[in-house]
Length: 432
Image 1 (tube, rainbow, N blue to C red):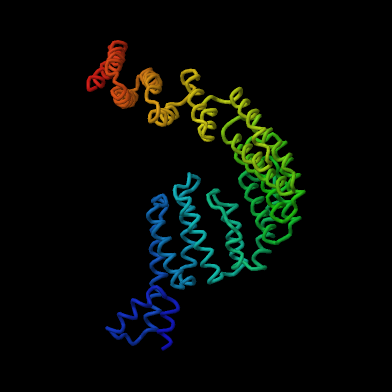
Image 2 (spheres, one colour; image 1 turned 30 degrees about the vertical axis):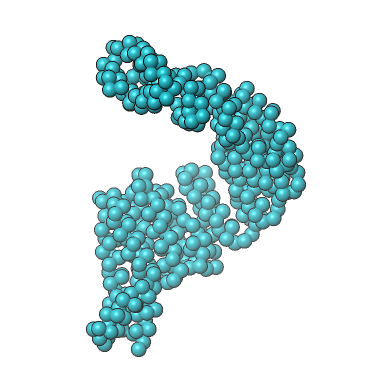
């Protein structure tokens, strides 16, 4: 019967359970049941959306209920029933949030993805969808970001052309709108140019604003992905030479450049790029990147002494300890920590070093334990008292194992004498 086929088609998740139910309780009007469930999807979502009042501040729990209902309806093939309700939910959430920080930012993005899925399954008029998308992005409070690619199937050529036309109209207002609006226009133009498949047009839009390292990274990445390695390398060099202030984007741009150099067989230049970056900022991350690239080039054995020497001379002692530990040079790491001035090696790093040393050479850790306890007690916060007490317990076990209970007692007595005016600390030490 057509009603049964419609039920299985439109509500696949319910079909099995309902089939078992109907075998026990025959229901003649399956067409009516399908219609009822379809209407229930739309009505249920409508009620949930009505609950997204401005005064509720877009309660995350209510937003999640809308999302869960929408997901269930889409899985059951009811895009047409809930499509407009999902759009209303997006508008309600944006209105409720206003210009405030979006505590439901991830949920808002999920609502947009659901709406895109609903539009793909039940496309609205493309011109109207284009106007809504552009308006929500450019005229809203800046909380909503549109992934045009998600809506491309429902927009189709006519809708994408309409988006492009509306965005180009906004370009004439550059210099008059807010920086956020201008950024939104630029981002939409980039997305539309990418979807159009015109690489040169896309590159032209990307290159209009090169005030950040991330922009150079975007250009170089697109060129690399389209097989234009030489151009990508040029843009990567330009971005790194522009005194980047975004360290994350700069690191990614440097990785891209090194990858391109290795691909074309210039391992020497790749090592030089890594070396220059490490010498500028000698830290464990750049040391590791230099080592990885130099190993691929077969020159790490010759390069390591110089790199390690530079790290010792210009980097933090904790960096030296981190690098030596990572390389398995545990004796060198221990000696570097012992030679450091107070405070140069963080407490957590000392504890890691001590834990490794204690197993094999427990006598070596007595002094570092005492040093770390003294550092903790230089701070008057009570949490430090607890940390110091925990270390004292560990130190007592070590010295008992060494047969040096008297040495521990003498050290503990000295602590009590030096800090006798700290009643909270003395009370804590009394338990030991």
